[in-house]
Each structure stands twice: as structure tokens, then as C-alpha cells.
Image 1 (spheres, rainbow, N blue to C red):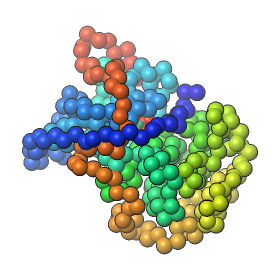
Image 2 (cartoon, rainbow, N blue to C red; image 1 turned 60 degrees about the horizontal axis):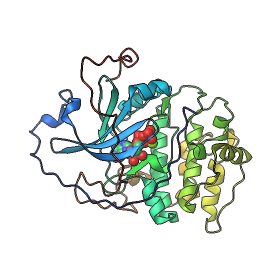
Image 3 (cartoon, helix red, strand yellow; image 1 turned 120 degrees about the horizontal axis):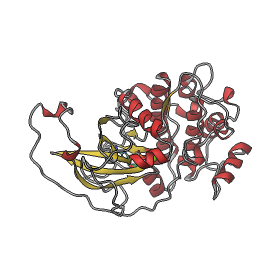
Length: 353
Ligand SMILES: Nc1ncnc2c1ncn2[C@@H]1O[C@H](COP(=O)(O)OP(=O)(O)O)[C@@H](O)[C@H]1O
Ligand SMILES: [Mg+2]
């Protein structure tokens, strides 16, 4: 399925950080990205690999960034052209949410598309969750509440995220979340129909191929809350069709340590009838925020990132990669500015910059 992502199964390996000392940026230069060239960035290591591309830690002068590189040929073959435009557009319009990764600049060359983002050094929530086994109620509440703020922000802009999962939630230096991967995010005024996302997190209406809207993000949040508290997702099977069957069946089995507020929140987010799903009713996000699971959360302080985070990622310096997995180097993503190489996709990506 072209629009479906695998849920990665990774194991944690340790890695020591790399230290680089380069001359400090000239004053005033840091605000202007118009002068940036794709060749300015030195590649240091791979941070992540996805279905459609690869993300590198890169350095320009003294600053570190994450650079997502997608091969044009692969984007076209897997029918992701519209999605990559959506990703860029949504990120360019989501600059004032502190919990969304900042897109600095886009490039393209004869072969690839490049998205240069801020580098979020704390690694994936996925890694921290697997290391911990499962999270406590308080830890889960902190991350869930920050994600609620992200969904509130996006939905107000009529944008659906569609790929909520622990791999796409990163932690910044202080342990606050930054959502990355807007490959499936979309501005939707009404309904949309594409089957996309990651099997474990798909809402029943997406699987059924019915039109759907922002309520699918609230479903995915229910899956995520369950997974953080349990250490495993609520609907699981070896193959995607088994997962879909379980989602459509909708039977929930809570581990005994889940308290009643958590059970109630999860049940209400995982309501198969989306007109009765929390977040998708009269008061929208407010209904979610008012749920007793969030009792004691200071929403205002949280939105200003003034609440102490439960996990402070270790890091020696701004370019430390200790929180990321090791990846084998893989060719095929080299910058190609050779005018002799014909860019057969030039028209398709003419507006990508
Ligand atoms: N801004 C970033 N800072 C640090 N790591 C990142 C950043 N963006 C992505 N990554 C890493 O790269 C992985 C893949 O990127 P993502 O955008 O999710 O690609 P895909 O669409 O292929 O899943 C992420 O899960 C994360 O580990
Ligand atoms: Mg991803």
C-alpha cells in the first residue's frame, strides 16, 4: 500500500556524540536563509530512515540541522507528490506552535528534494518509551497534554495531521515535544478519503474508506495514550489486515494497572462512532482538555513550556546524536547539481522550493 507506513521495530543501541567546533556565525547572517545553498551543509550522520526518504544530521557553519531528503523518482513512483507539497505547506504555515518542528528551508536538485529543519536532539518518544517499557500516568499526561495542544493548533487551521505515533514525536533539549513528519498532514475544509497513516493508529472510518476529517487524529491519540501507559498498542497483529480486523471489532482490553480516568479517556477517544468521539463533539478540543485525566494540568504554563518535563534527554552539545539509533550509510542521496543529468521530474516539482 503506497500510503501506508510501517511501524518500525527498532532496538536501542548506544552511540557517543560527536563534537565539532567551528567559527561562530557572523552577526546578522542567521536570519537570512535566502543565501543558503544545498551544498553548504555537511552531512554528519543519519538520524532516521522512513518509507520515503532519509533524515541526516547536517551542519552549516556552527549550526546543526536535520535534513530530510527524498528521491524525486521514489516520491513519484509511490504517488507521494501531493503529500510532499502538503508537508512543506503545512510546515511553512505552522511557525508559531512551539511543539512543531521548524522548517528552515527547502531545496531541490536534479534528483532529490530537501527539507532543512531544526535539529531536535532528544530523539524519538518511541526510543524513550521502549527504554522505559511503559510510562507512568504523570509522564503520559504530560506528553498527551502537549499533543492535545498541537492537535488544537492544527485543527484550528483546518489541518489534519494523520500520522500520530511515537516515532514522529521528538523531544527537545528540555524534554518538551516537537512533532515532525508532516508527510500526511493536509489542509482539509471538509472531508478527505485517502487511506494513509500507520496501521496501528488508523481510525475505523479510514480503514472503511469513508470520508473522514480531523477526528482521526483524536482516535490516534487514544491509541497513543494506551501505548504509552501499556508499552504496547491496543490493536495489534503480525500483519496489517489482522490489525484492521481488531480495530473494526473495537474490543479494548486494559491492563489492570490503568486507572479509571485513563480508561475513560481512552474509551472516549477510541469511540468507533466518530460523532461520539471526544475531541469531535460540540466543544471540540475543550472537551478533551476538561477530561479528568488532565486534572492538575496548567494548560497555560504547559503551552509556554514552563512545566518541567518528565524526561530530560542526555546531550553534551547541540550536535549530539546519543539519542538516535545508528544507521548504516546508504548511497543514493548525494547532491546532484550536474546540468548534464536530466531532471525528468522538473515540471512536477517546479514549485518545490
Ligand atoms: N527535525 C528532526 N530532528 C531530529 N530528528 C528528526 C527530525 N525529523 C525527523 N527526524 C528523524 O528521522 C525520522 C524519519 O523522519 P520522518 O519525517 O518521520 O520521515 P518518514 O516520513 O519517512 O517517516 C524520524 O522518526 C526521526 O527519528
Ligand atoms: Mg515518520
